[in-house]
Image (cartoon, rainbow, N blue to C red):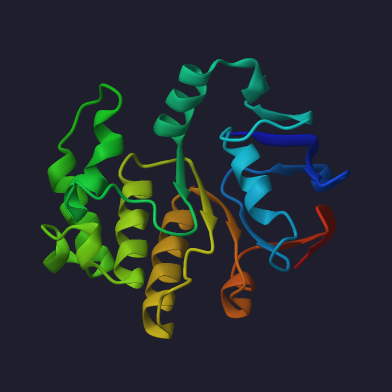
Length: 223
């Protein structure tokens, strides 16, 4: 997947004034890259990720995937793109309360017609994430760290080409966070690209690039 971001801007109204949550951000993400996106809370990281994945429309700019502007597609086409090619790990609680942990992880697999066994694949992911004992539990019964690991399994169920992760190790202890990184590193070595927003300094240093957002502007690209 070739991902190119051109001059993305997202503006919001605050009272009688406007502010740019993201302003004129441009970058390209190479196939197999691992980029850590850092910045203080409120710097625009989540807004940027939501635009990159097509969940939030920009006020100006383009998100090009293999040369096609994501926002030239209709809602269904963007949903199909996300389901088929991207894994998204959002902040906060995002699981469906009426499904078990295993049911939540399997759900994206069944949103499009595809071959394979979602049950087997979900259980393999649960083993990798250390949550096999939770497969029949419901979200209300899980801790924050357990919820995050189920969300990781859900993001990985369709073998995405690109993973967007918004603070994927928040709510996790140090040992579990390192296990998550090791899983990410294995996937990245297999060619999966990552764009990861994080406050975890140790984790941010393990990719091949660090980009910083400050007041909605991409101000640094270092490594």
